[in-house]
Length: 455
Ligand code: NCD
Image (cartoon, rainbow, N blue to C red; front, side, top):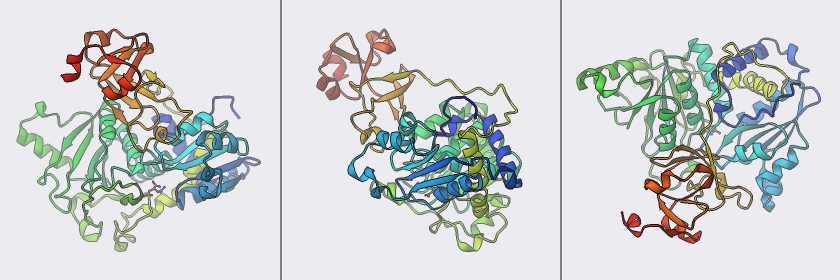
């Protein structure tokens, strides 16, 4: 076992592109010769902690651990554990991390796996945290696309269904953008990709968003409020006349390589009105643009894909399931330090994280799904500072984007608008940020200039 630091897999961003490719090579090896790895994890224990229902993710991780010669302990129903008595997530992980060698965690709150990774003495693998990310499903999806299409760069991947709460969509979109694929969003009305995910695709991964028109989407999806997110900026308005740009966009949409279908995450809806989407059936797939499209779905399918599609060679959702075991064997071998990844492009660097703001006073993450909303008492709010002017922060737990307007210095009792000349002079380590005037006042701060509040 290498003496490196604990290898958690909380976000798809925890792996560089080169590491992802190394992991895929390892998955190929796991699939090709099961006997060669049947003792790799002998004596090691996987703990599966699932606070939400699961069929594939839990059972395939357990199968993967058994195939590596290890064993597992499972908590399929957290209502039967001390979680039901009010035990904090931190304490639960401090405990189970002393029984097993790796923990696979699924939790309904966004950012839960980040909290777990901080408190667990052993690696944490995120098996889905609320509507945020599902990085191991992404690795399976990406592996299926990479092996079937023999490339990722330049592909056109269309997402349909619930792009708002579908965590598999978020982590797969980030990964595809990093590998240079274009993303087409075809959401059910009310379930569009969240603002913070679109912004992240733009700012962190250089995607350029273009709203699609019915003329761009002619066919089954023409009533959808579509969005094309291109790797790079090929459809920037100043590069074309309007008509040229529209026809270039339509040419781009003429060949979809992957149609990634998701179910509506009913359990996460907060009373939104949700529109209908066309069912994916053979008639829809007869549209010319889908002639070579792989049809993927993380499953469970409810009624998004007609059963008649199952026997079509483009249907790859049960192949995704099958590939889940070797991919998860590779993930376990990696995080347990049992195998080193063969990383071809050694120069591939991890992106530096933006500076961190951390304070018990002032701003809390306003997202109701954030883990900081329920795990009270031991978590200090933390945000990555993306920009000072305008003030733009990303919750370090759930990734939610916040644009607060009020700031103060720790050494004074007055607060200012973020864009006042005084605010710019406050060093990050002395900064206190407020989500509202009331929050600032409750914390004992007074406005420096009443006129600023009225502005
Ligand atoms: C997905 C999940 O849990 O996010 N399932 C899975 O792990 N394959 C998708 C879903 O539940 O719709």
